[in-house]
Length: 220
Ligand SMILES: *Cc1c(COP(=O)(O)O)cnc(C)c1O
Image (cartoon, rainbow, N blue to C red):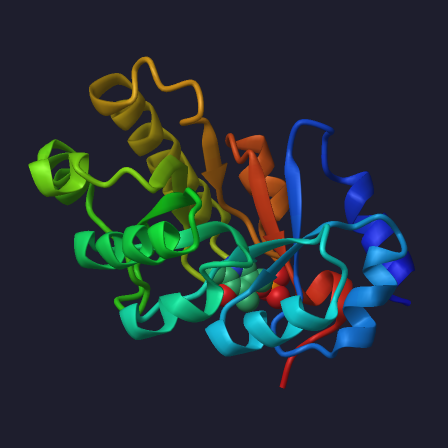
């Protein structure tokens, strides 16, 4: 079933868009089934769960951290994570830098933006991000690399609303590219779109989509 679901989702995703299969809460065997279909990118939202899964699964898996990340949990994922989607403060970024340094590596990160109507979703505003990107304490961080932006649209049937939020994230990306990353070729990712809205997200500029339940089934 997972293989079938995965290949169905893949049919909707162009080659230049990366599919992250969101495996949070799902058992190892589910991930192995997707891996056997050549799926290498998986998303998790709990640090210890990612750490445990990374320790038993294939080493060539690329682990994406997509949930709210507490600073005291960064140490659990610093050696295994491929991309952190959910950077929402300078203090978090400083901790990621510290743990990356300890692991003798650079960790790629996305800045998360608050684009949804719901107040529970984390993230920067454009102004906050621009301020941070100019601060010396940000510029001093040598073991992190900002490679783009991430956002979650409002969970809603209202397509016009969801589209306007995706367009907002695209425009935030373009503003940051112009103001802070003009010569940074690595700054190119827009992570947006989940099971219920990834097709819309792709139509509006997503370069990474994060799809869970359409592949692995609904969660409790
Ligand atoms: C759970 C989650 C997803 C995947 O959601 P589905 O609706 O199951 O596709 C994507 N992004 C984030 C940040 C999530 O927490």
